[in-house]
Length: 178
Image (cartoon, rainbow, N blue to C red; front, side, top):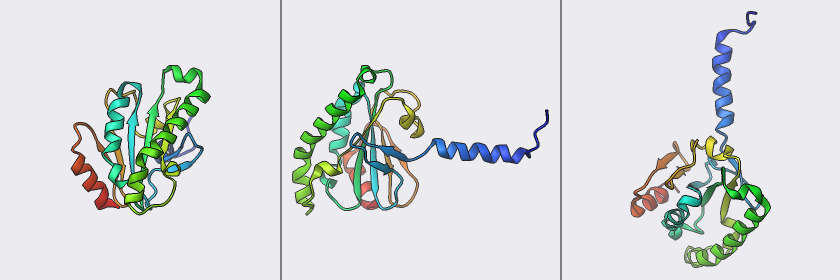
């Protein structure tokens, strides 16, 4: 049976579906919906999984001096595909939330140093990706053995940084984009 639609429709349609599949909207463990590509924010997105958890913490700390600054946010995407966390997602989310409560105390001095009196806990974002859909939409098709950083500047295309990281260069790039 011959299609009644022109060939260009399918080409354009594939592009549209690809755009939908690459949605930049995520939901955090606290139920906050974020658009990673929101041009009002310079957004640092750090990939993590159980294998690279220690390295993720080190990569995240690179941006500690920026915590609490206007127009900066950091989002951790935790890849939980195929992990035991899938058996108890509620427990996993509550554990991450407790960790974020502790992290808020750790980054509070940076908030104060940047003149931000707000509660840091409200600005700490973690996405628990149990299905892999978020990771795949961001280009992380398979679980990785190294942390990676996606950066969405306020203007311009997103950037992907892979280790080894130069902390000063990363901070400088993010500050320039804020």
